[in-house]
Image (cartoon, rainbow, N blue to C red; front, side):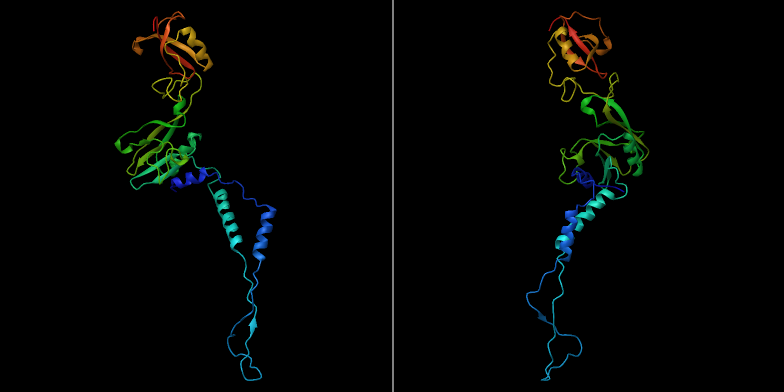
Length: 290
């Protein structure tokens, strides 16, 4: 069954995971149910059929007390809350929240990541349950790309997907700050064949990044906000160590990567740039002068 982004919004409210009701609440509910409201005075009612006749031949008016009126307003509201809570917590298939949400737009299906920490096997299972041949692969990435779709492959144009940024094509008033409108993918209704999506996970030390930012000091990257350009190698070494980085190789500043590394230069040389292709390691572009 397709679920809308409303599901994600409800999950964001973090409903209670228990349906237990305290003794005080039960007592209050019982009082509400049995409470009656007294009539201010007895009201005459005409009985159906023949009426008893008085001594003067005039039908007697028969009085009966108003029926007790149950004060159910409060109790009814409480019961509704209880039913809703039980539905949210106990409905079949909701023992584990969904990792993805699916929204039908008419011409396509918008798939959003609701739980970025979920095992990709859950993503695959939910895509399969929707009848979509989409496989999610977890790949090692640099820090800013963890928990994001970073790429995909497909055999032909009819299997083409489109990755969505947070806030893009959100339902209603949802935006990039809402849990229900984060990373996503748009699957066209005429989708055929298969597709594979790369989903970023935290890289283990020594793993080659499948995706990384242009600069090692970009927002979210390992050296974000850290000054290292223009410093000597001797000055940069402790900075790198403080961030859990080791120097993998040195390269002559201004040369192309395919030129290859150089031998270990003196610590008095200057660092012009740094790049990390492997988790925990950096390559330094250096020169004798600034």
